[in-house]
Image (cartoon, rainbow, N blue to C red; front, top):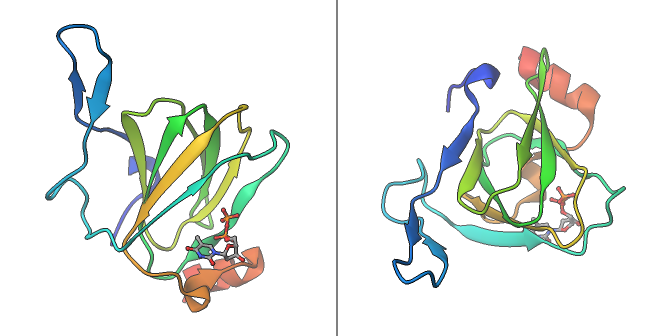
Length: 138
Ligand code: TYD
């Protein structure tokens, strides 16, 4: 997937507001994501001073949603860094493969949902930043 890190933006997830004030419902279906979802996992009970992520993926693409609470995603393409805050359950962040990410500043009670296009495979991870920089150069 080709990308410019400047173009990575929050994406609005369709929201159905109940006309009788019974709350909201958001849905992801069909071709909303540019990949077929093969795995779903979620982070929760994350202490506010913890950092998650701290890696890139060779092939995996990921769509992140703050189902509850908020956190910051630091994105890094090996040249530039950007920080995007997720704090709404109807906004998601599509992270292409080949992007270093760190998740930090978790508020209490945050639940971070992750929809991804691959099964878990440790071989797909780049866990050392220096390896990531090399990966981006080749
Ligand atoms: P990791 O992806 O490094 O978490 P994070 O990026 O949120 O800090 O995964 C943490 C641990 O969980 C690591 O030992 C791998 C394991 N894991 C699985 O076994 N299956 C999975 O689907 C995921 C996402 C992680």
